[in-house]
Length: 345
Ligand code: SF4
Ligand code: SF4
Figure (cartoon, rainbow, N blue to C red):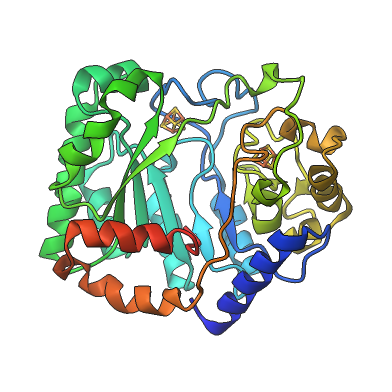
């Protein structure tokens, strides 16, 4: 993180204290949906069931214009939103372009059907972070949760990536193995970390289940909660769909909070534009309008307690990161937990 980015993070954490409708820093990161097609049908996901917007693949030209537009203003790209980004036939070219232009990239992937060539490209192109959505400890559980018999091939792909990284002497991509805790894996959740502890990934992340599918039914809304745990998303980042629709929320699967379209308008106009100011104001006041109705029943509305982080930790982390193989897995989990308070990814 450079000086400018550290200043922007400071401004962001200050904004979380007083929640202004307008902010004086750019979005800290950007979700870029390369596609909303997917090859799985995960139980907890809105994609296969309630996402009704058109499916497609982002065009190269739109991606190039987007990168030129945000260059030197937003460095951290999340190359996914609702879908499996590696299904994009030009995925490697998109990643190369982003990396050539100096962006940092995070990919969330299920790794299903990813070819050995593409796995190799993830290392060669120095993808920064890969978060693998696994959610299961064996094939039966995988099929139950993800709707497909693909556990063995995903485990094989993970092993290949670890081997490739070692063979090529690369510390990237940083590998996170993710498990979303849900009723179907609740009984084995405690063993998830143990089972994969010696696999060779960098961090094992067990996260809470967000009930996106039932969001549309929760129209009575939630009572006003602790203002210090109010959702951070409208103050933190933007997301753009494969066809250029811009929303402030990574859970807005049908773009109900759409701010407008890129490239018709600038992302930075949306960032402090009337609609997003209204959404921020509505969240603070707990009074919802058309643009923020989607937030009304959201289980993240008061689910984001944010500690004031120690930003000097960024420097410590960046020194430790390339030498993480020398640090015990337990110690690294602690360091990583600390980093996640300030991590752009
Ligand atoms: S969670 Fe990811 S992999 Fe699963 S259906 Fe949704 S988009 Fe696809
Ligand atoms: S409250 Fe929920 S729907 Fe609203 S911005 Fe936050 S995460 Fe998105």
